[in-house]
Amino acid sequence: MKCPFCNFIDTQVKDSRPSEDADSIKRRRCCQNCGARFVTIERREIPEIKVVKRSGAKKPFDAQKVLQSLRIATRKRPVSNELLEKIVSHILKKIEKSGETEISSTFIGQLIMNELAKIDQVAYVRYASVYQYFNAVDDFSEFIQRITKQNEKKQ
Image 1: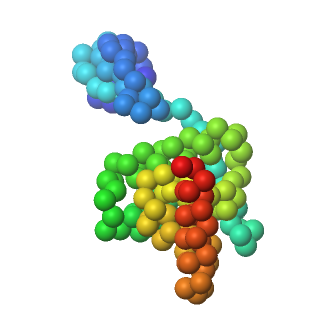
Image 2: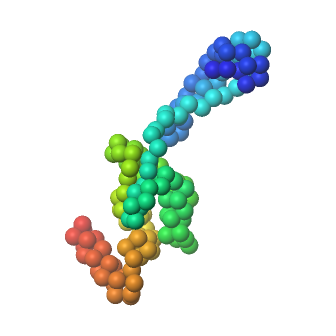
Image 3: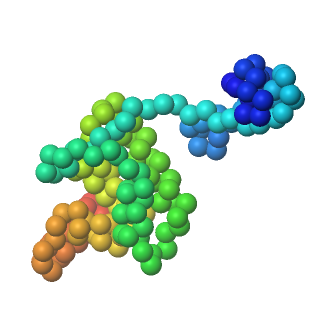
């Protein structure tokens, strides 16, 4: 690793530790030439993931879009931003585990709905109303009846 201060090529690693989410490694380094200390962060490189929209268009996966849709669904609900960020991280890991470089928007939407169903039923219904194109009040009532039946079966 090249020193950012004197551009000397040989630097020594003094300490390494994983990040909190274990997705990166933080290394403290010392330059052999000028003695400067600095920190580097190593992350694994993942292939770019493309989202295949319903129209067939392909767009790069954007975790911020997922986070924004979660924030909209959970607006004015007792759900912390930290939890939403963990959900986005969990969804990204599931996508990466699939090994696919092209993921359908339908699959991502279903992952989001599954996570929302676990944390907040109101946010789940809000998200479903947009994701599944509810057009009338009947769509809401049918959906709510369906999830109520599913909840009763689980108990």
